[in-house]
Image 1 (spheres, rainbow over the protein chains, first blue to last red):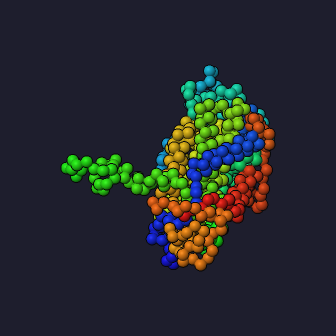
Image 2: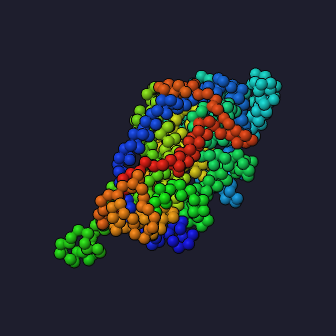
Image 3: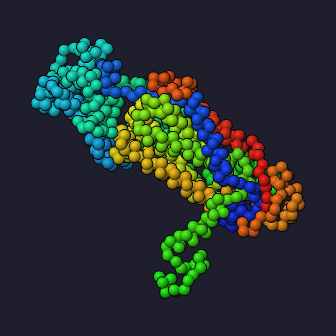
Length: 317
Length: 254
Length: 55
């Protein structure tokens, strides 16, 4: 051996680790081990599956949202019209809201792809679906004829009034200048309760659809869907990234990614996601290239766990 | 090239610089991984610990992941929600993934403490890490494909991390069509390819010797040990017969 | 626990969580991590049934 640093180096040297083994051997049957492995693991898989099963919490629809939390649905629809929802202020790739993208120092990766999945919240979530109705509400014409400023004023005023109303109940909103907005949001809530909004938002008028971007963004803008997730400990600030519903284990291998969201400087940063992703990427690269990093690669020598792994070998030499 | 000028028949594997690309590839492969290395009948004496079973445990779990995944995939995404058998196959898919990660992580920990990248084995370590990383992405896309509340929420939550680094525009977690392609074709192929490469590299380089192994270890004194006798150069007693039964001398070809 | 051939719809409870001061872990994840640590320790400590050795 040539010094302690060399012993855990990745480099191939003319030593015991670098040369083909020419010493004592033991009988070994690769295929037998594979077969035993598959059988044993198979029994474990079938046994644990029979015992514990897997959770399958039914999905949430716009219909169930509008039925279970109508006030939240109407409030969210008003925000979509006013352009004050999370999605409306998201930035790339959905829209070009200024200063909305996350940055890592000066680097703005979020803006690189541009607005590749454009979402116009008023048009895509409310106006467009209402236009698909067999008899669209008359209020649509008022909305379409109004200026941008007028629309925004109506919707914002209604949104604020809803927030101030008892139980946020649309029926108890104080009088005000809301234009066609209450009629539009009310019609959208009816449409959702009847179950037609799910199909219209997902299919966009076509038969086939596998893209749930619009439905999911709309759902997430409310507080009903995130509230359900929070009640299952699935939110980001509840270590939710690694959690599965119920007691079934989830993606526990994401523990460190999950942890970053709980601690500063990530926790309160507006760039939390970007910082967490980059931090994980750097740490993953470091672990991958561990054998090139002096100090780190010597840990197995300094903390000799290997004495236990190869105790038979060391005992007999 | 030069071979065209030499019409004389050549013996296989003899003419070092002659041959087509295919010839060269075959020679290179056979030199790197001769059949008795690919499917060995024995292993160095130090390969004797429970620490060595976890890689195979991960491979065995992968077999069950693929088998249950094929059944789920061929029945379509709605089947497992309504069929009791489908629910059971879905459970098996989940639990084989959990076992896969359990075995893989313990394998990774153990290989770290063995400093298993030593002696020119750095690519083995790197491909092992790659299979871990690709598996994480594959598992994540599986969670997105559950078509239930969990997948809805994971898609909603995960989009922020992906969008924040500009990936979400192309890897759109809310687009089930995209996620199907990733989860049932691209990522399984990637996991399979990296795992196969990793296993082949283990065979090419052999299992890394103990950290403190040295030239004068009894286990390394070659060819001269008589049955039951003491190895030359070592004053200590030879390994007890419980774990080492002295047997016929090994062919020198090893 | 009645997972045997039971389809999961509406059978999922709220889950069991352990936590102190911002640190939270779900019971399933805790068990998986504990199993990994236990397997690691057992792999180091348990004697391996000896195979046939030869030169």
